[in-house]
Each structure stands twice: as structure tokens, then as C-alpha cells.
Amino acid sequence: MRAIQINGCCRATDLHVSNIPMPKVRPGWVLVKVHAAGLNHSEAVLRMYEADNDYIQKPVVPGIECVGEVADPSDSSFNEGERVIALMGGMGRSFNGSYAEYALLPAKNVFRVQTDLDWISLAAIPETYFTAYGSLTECLQLQATDTLLVRGATSTVGQAAVQLGKAMGATVIAAARRAASFQALKELGAHHCIIDDEHISQQCLPVVPNKVLELVGPKTLHDSLRTVSRPGYVCSTGILGNQFTVDHFDPIKYIPNGVFLTGFFSNYPTQQAIDALFDLISRAAILPQYAQIFTLDEIVQAHTLLEQGGAGGKIILKINENHA
Figure 1 (cartoon, rainbow, N blue to C red):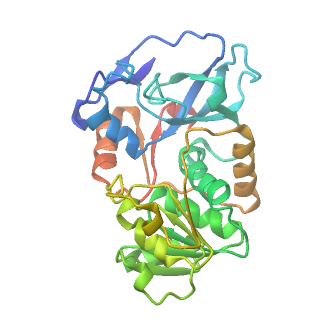
Figure 2 (figure 1 turned 90 degrees about the vertical axis):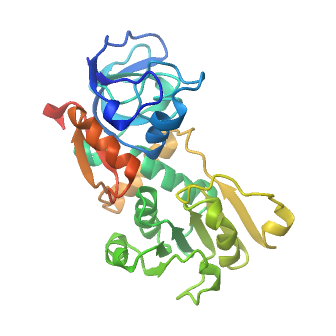
Figure 3 (figure 1 turned 90 degrees about the horizontal axis):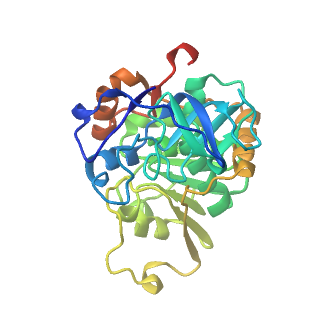
């Protein structure tokens, strides 16, 4: 089968299509015919910085998510030909991921979906929308009476959070670095848009949020904690600010009284959560957002754009072109 495989850290220009053996099906694993896969920043991090580490199973096919159909269900409860999505659980690091025509994946990380979406639109959903949905529901426990601030709203997860937050009935404030992004964010469902100058807590906001989805990360986390009303909730999910930790963290002084800090880790999806997510997407007629589509043969262009940023949304890798 055709696949992208790496043996260690490399440049985007080093990526190329290889012919590798088809995976051999084994108990507890499902063979998926991959139709499309969303690209993620973590895959660029793998290629640039992480692949030389011993815990990466090399050579490895990158890719932490995909959409497709069951080619061989093995001993699972799936049926051949079922539409499925797959994400996380070690994809593209502990075992081969989605940059291939077929992927052998743990059954626990494969989920059946009931949807009429085409493969490309479907590929925009798994990791991005699950991360946004889990942050809003499991961590922020978002209600229709809440006011939600999405910090990093122009990112892929941010755009999804704006859509999902609006669909859940909350008042949504979208924070972005440029006013030029406001119109697009309002079209996604934002009720208000503000400039993120890294000091939102000092701004006179149109309405004060009681819940914040923090996607910029530790760089603006303290400001987000001081932005919410009391009681207030902040979920730290992203690291768009490229600062990964909080220096000299003192929780007593760092977290204001009456503010609750949590974080979302997307490594443990469940069929129940996926069903609820797709039900919300269907009921609210949410259109999954993506920016650009590339084929396997265009992997260099795709990863160059992924590494440099500026795609303006999700990048989709089209695998089995005749079905996408």
C-alpha cells in the first residue's frame, strides 16, 4: 500500500510516498481503509522534534486521526464496510497512523458514525471537534445560560468551539489577534468578537464570561483566570502561544478565589462521547470547517504549510481519492 513513513526527525521536504506491506490483522485491532485524514500540529512536532526518541516506534506512519470504512473487523463488533472515524490512543507514534491507504488500529480507538457528510467534511471532525466538545462538556460543563470566551478562536479547535458553543445555546465571545477575523467568526456563531492583546482581563468587555476555553495556553492563562466572573471556570486545552508550562506555579496565588481551573486531554475518546458530538453536529446543522485539501503525493506541500501555519483552518489529506 502507499504510505508516508519516517525513520526519525526530518524536514518536510524529506517526506515522500513509499510502498509498504499491508498491515496484518490481529485480534483486538481493526483494519480501516483510510479515505481522508486531518493534519495536526502534533504531527509536525513529531517530524521536527520527537521522532528520534526511543518511545516512537520506528519506522512509523504519522497521523493521529482518520476517517474511512472497516476493511476487516477482525474479532471486533464492527461490520465490514461500516463508516468509522479513529483518533488518538497512540496513533502515529506507538503504532502506524493515518498517512496510509490502510491503517490497523486498536478497536477501542475506532468509532462508528452515522452521518451523511462526505469524506473530506467528515475528516475535519475527529480530533478537532472532539477536543472542542470534550473541553466544553466534560471540563467546562457548558450550559445554555453561560457566557463562553474562546481564546484562540481562529484556530481549528477554536472555530469548532465557537460553532459548538453556539449550538449548545451559550453566548459566545471569540477572541482573536486581528479584527480582520471577526466577520468569519461571527458567521460561525460568535455573538461578540474582541481583540486578544494578552490583557483581556483589563478590557471593558461587552459581557463578562463565566467560562473560558483557553487555547493560547500558559502564555495567557493567568489573564484568563482573572477575566472570568465568580464563580468562573477556565479550561486550558491548547498551547498556541508556544509556551508549554507556567514558571514557578503557585496555585494559591495564581488561581483567584472562586475560579476553577481544569484542562482537557483528548487521548481517551469513547463511543458515547462521539455519538453525542455527532448528534449535536446533526441537530445544529453544523458545517465542519476545513481550509485546504492535499493528496498523499502532495505531502511536502501539506506539511510545509502545517509547519509554517497560516492555512486558516484544518488541512485535510485525501488518501483514497476515488472515494473522497
